[in-house]
Amino acid sequence: MVHCSCVWFRKYGNFIDNLRIFTRGGTGGMGYPRLGGEGGKGGDVWVVAHKRMTLKQLKDKYPQKRFVAGEGANSRVSALKGSKGKDCEIPVPVGISVTDENGKVIGELNKEQDRILVAEGGLGGKLLTNFLPLKGQKRVIRLDLKLIADIGLVGFPNAGKSSLLSQISHAKPAIADYAFTTLKPELGKIMYNDFKQVDIFGFQLSSQTQYRTAFETIILLIKELELYKEELQRKPALLAVNKMDLPGAQDKFHILMHQLQNPKEFLHLFEKNMIPKRTMEFQHIIPISATTGEGIDELKNYIRKSLDEHANQEDDVYHKKQLLNLQISNTVSYSKPPPKSPVTSPR
Image 1 (cartoon, rainbow, N blue to C red):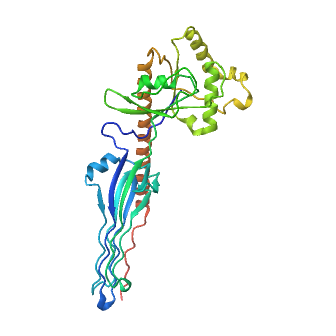
Image 2 (image 1 turned 90 degrees about the vertical axis):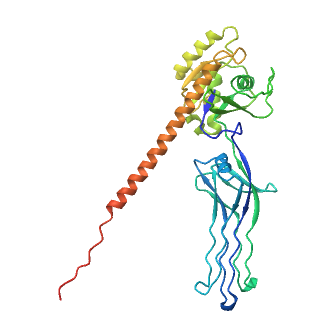
Image 3 (image 1 turned 180 degrees about the vertical axis):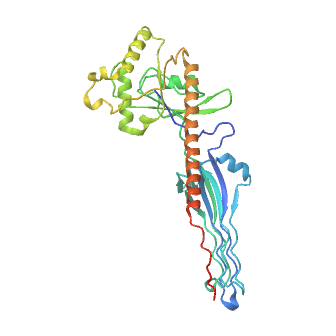
């Protein structure tokens, strides 16, 4: 079973999933000893999440990878309290983990406009500092993109996930004819002719399984997903029916298609607590063989088509939201009553 979600790509080719940068808060402004004036505080350095930003764009725009905030204004006769220095904002993609040189996590940016202070500006000069300013905080930080694959391969042990992963991607997982060959999750990459890259991530479920039909396997997988996280059942899904090279596979496939078209007729085969709350609809059902390569190209085409459709839907939702915000803004501006003209009475 293949589950689709549109997110970031991993570090392949020119893609970057981590970046090391230098940051420094601004130096404070000079104090004014004769009148007791206080210099302005130096600017701070912030890391700010932006939805349509990438680490590669950040590196290309700032090749020196050096971010320094503005200095605080000096105290003077006309302004005894100096103004604060200009803050520096580092634009990063959503899903960034920020750590210091020692690997200590400073914070995470998980949604748009999340912000983390990474280097504080120095204090302005005042009586306690003999009116001398303090320098801003220096910090080398690391930005790590928390990676989530575009595609997830879901299946019980020995379903052929590793074999399929090796067929449709550049991954080379260990493959053997016993349970738990996959010791850790494998991440692969599918390359398309237009240079689109798609990440595919395989993971397995419980090994406490016995022989079952394909239909029983699908129902139990759906139940596993429901118990893990119900929202996964609402994601676009493709069903890859593997091992079509085995004897009698075609007959079993026809039986499976009949069961999937009429699932309620066969749910009595399961214990009540094993039946999922809702059945999952598959965009496409593709018979394949990870051994012979049968159906692999067709599966890759459907994966790409599903991802493109999902991305277009997200863009439509985004544009509709922007349009709605614009309409609301215009409505508010037009609904304001015009300012009243002053009325004067003759004397």
